[in-house]
Image 1 (cartoon, rainbow, N blue to C red):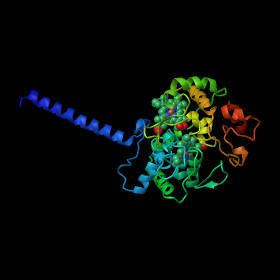
Image 2 (image 1 turned 180 degrees about the vertical axis):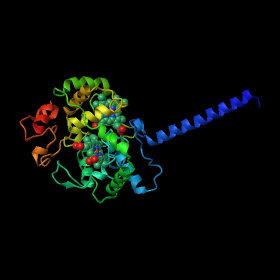
Image 3 (image 1 turned 120 degrees about the horizontal axis):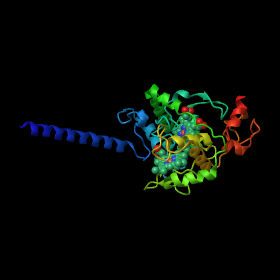
Image 4 (image 1 turned 60 degrees about the vertical axis):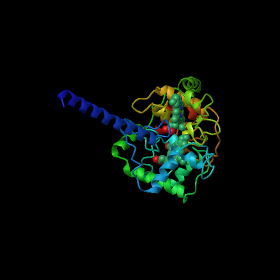
Length: 320
Ligand code: HEC
Ligand code: HEC
């Protein structure tokens, strides 16, 4: 073989090898991503390798968090007991994305005293809260196979979470308050330009073919989370949007400005959604988060101020 054709053979072999690697990368990605929002290991954080697990309970828990609607949605195989959302519509990448309401260290945080209920809660109770509020439904029993599996998954996720991932979670906490109230009218314009193409002009989202799960989950209306959910608090919603939406945004490359994120959150929060009996929440009213929008309060600010801000004066009231 001449040195030219030898070189050509080497180049061809390299090309073939690269294609195989690329193809494998694509296959791995598609097999892991059922939703278009799934970011596999972006920004340095790593999605733990579920496929290599042998423990079927952990795997089942993972599937329940990822594809909740297939089991508990209006067309679910176990029970029709939720609004059809998946846990990972909010806790993205099955709770492993450090910047999307991460569940990576949830297991280690319980049991703990919750200010919302005023009592010490086990993790089962906190998960049930999201079934009842974020999923506007009813939760599987604490000793059910499903609850046991979700907890096994969260325990495993906590075990495999590295300190650098935990650091990222801490770094991404909080979004600076504006000096003015968040503005639903301005937010409506932000919504039309950046969000309506996927979530719809009426905020109802878009079901996948087969109508079991959502391609684009609802943001308000009767299939969305209810007024007792954590996402109904403006700071949670604005931060989620700032670091995750529109799809493709991330903590290191956000797309909206802080002000746009607060305003579009205000627009979403101003729309109708299912109700919830929150009368027993925050029995000690002085412990209410400053953006909990329902009185009575231990401060002189109105429900509207607690819903939309400005939050700095309320924060100052409690830190004086
Ligand atoms: C609509 C968005 C949304 C959906 C859907 C959702 N959650 Fe949540 N979840 C939240 C928010 C927001 C919080 C944080 C609330 C807060 O801090 O006030 C939270 C908190 C939690 C926590 C506590 C985390 C911790 O570290 O203390 C757990 C556990 C949890 N969710 C599990 C689930 C599970 C399991 C599902 C599916 C059955 C689910 N969530 C569905 C929004 C959601
Ligand atoms: C290209 C499509 C797309 C665009 C544009 C988009 N989203 Fe989303 N959004 C999604 C998907 C997909 C999810 C579910 C995330 C997942 O499963 O990882 C989601 C989830 C959400 C959630 C949490 C789940 C829920 O239903 O409450 C909120 C809140 C949200 N988006 C708000 C917005 C806002 C506000 C904008 C505009 C600034 C926006 N999105 C733009 C696709 C989109």
